[in-house]
Length: 191
Image (cartoon, rainbow, N blue to C red):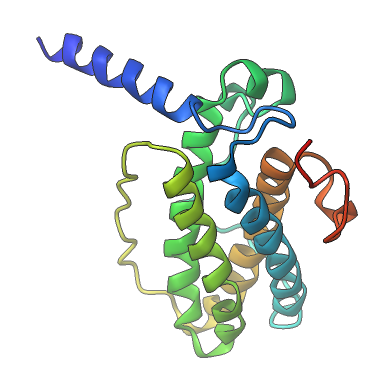
């Protein structure tokens, strides 16, 4: 009985998510905000990432709770046109985890720069939530205490990875290279 219910929920979720997912230039009006907020997140994350590089000149091998995107997440252009739900769900879950991680590092005295990206990250998640119906991500809070000497490394690591991920979100939702987008870019406007 549980597997039948699970199958029904999965099928319902896929249809609901696909109803407003990005597919080429046919973005639904409800998802226009996601396109704009993905570009805004990318701009702010880039600035914050560069500022974080001044916090620590060292990089570290850090064990993070944030998942990596994989080729099996189907975020390539061809898969997005055919079946975007898997990619969109994964992006939402990763962004939700980043919100938690950015919240954590922003509490470090040395990482107050992270506060600059929090509004753009929250807006992106809110816009995605309005555009695509999906199950709520379950995030378990990392309660591990971060030693003071590890804080600059974790700050830089988190903000640099968020910037890298924001490039992917901007490419998926705004179609193309986010570095080339401007307010009047024809690549960013609906056809």
